Image (cartoon, rainbow, N blue to C red; front, side, top):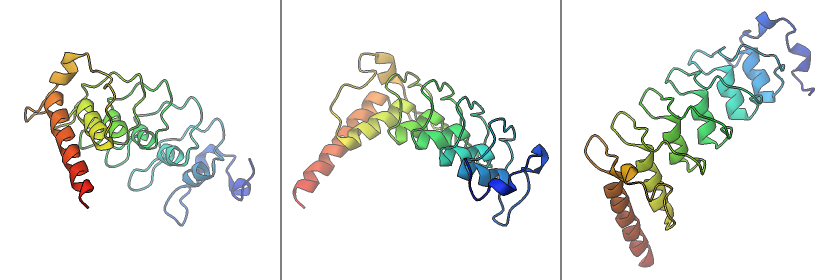
Length: 191
């Protein structure tokens, strides 16, 4: 694919780390435009804040098929997988849901917050530092949307019993979130 960057792309693998006036590397720019070579191997090249070439390619939708360096992280421990999860772009065979950022939020937490979990997701028990599980976030989003359909784990009492460090179970949290959603709906009727 020819772009305005094509004439300056290095044939030498050692020049991808050339710093541009933007503060990013030549490899970052190539990731933006989707012109990295098929055999590119310097995904870990990073800006001063730790944003890797892989992060940039994930954000721009230019990661190659077969990419698997999900654990590459920036200065806040946000992984490449976290970036893809927010945008709903994780591959169907993704299995690194447990990767965490510096605050303990897993890739699964972010996917749940953005309503981007796959239909066959099963790792509801993954918890952050406060014990908030993926299931807690999922029921929060379901209640916000007014979803009345059966939850994926509806028949699994173990998931309903998962609790935060403060002792709030998924069942209690779901009940609380549904009540809050109903109150919002009632208030909206009188506006």
